[in-house]
Image (cartoon, rainbow, N blue to C red; front, side, top):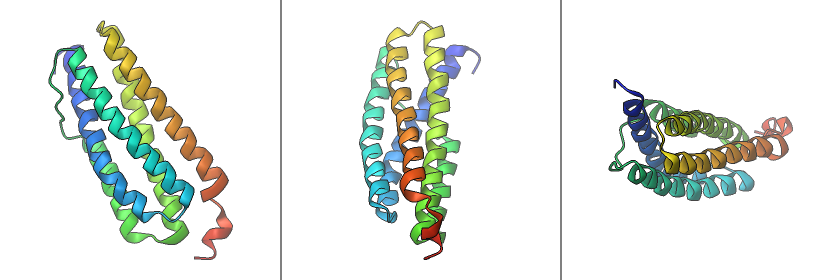
Amino acid sequence: MKTLADAFEHTLQDIYWAENALSKALPMVSKSVNNAELKAAIDDHLKETKGHIKTLEAVFKSIGKKAEGEKCDAMDGLLKEADGLIEEASGHALDVALIGAAQAVEHYEIARYGTLREWAKELGHDEAHTLLTSILDEEKAANSKLTSLAVTAVNDAKKSSKK
């Protein structure tokens, strides 16, 4: 990479890979959780993630590039962490651990989409800027939903003492 345009395209490929990997991982996460509201939130986010993939394909098209992914080591690590939690934790502890892992994913996505959006603006990719803004807004909303869910329904310490 030598230019902002190169960094933009590389990072776009990175997040495209990440969203595809996330769409494959979320069904297992959904099956693993115990809290019905958390399961519904994960299922909703799977639908959003599939939409993000389509929106990213439109971003690629808008800049005249083919939609291709490049392995995202960050997302790969976050998903491996979630796999480990599913293996090691159970019951309420699993739910609280997975909601934390889900928020780590959201924070990563928010950082990436915020960066990509601003780079698109700088590069004069107006359509890409608009599309990336829509994804960024959805990721922020998903993170807020997870925070609210954690505070109101999942993080109850009394539940953890019941095993």
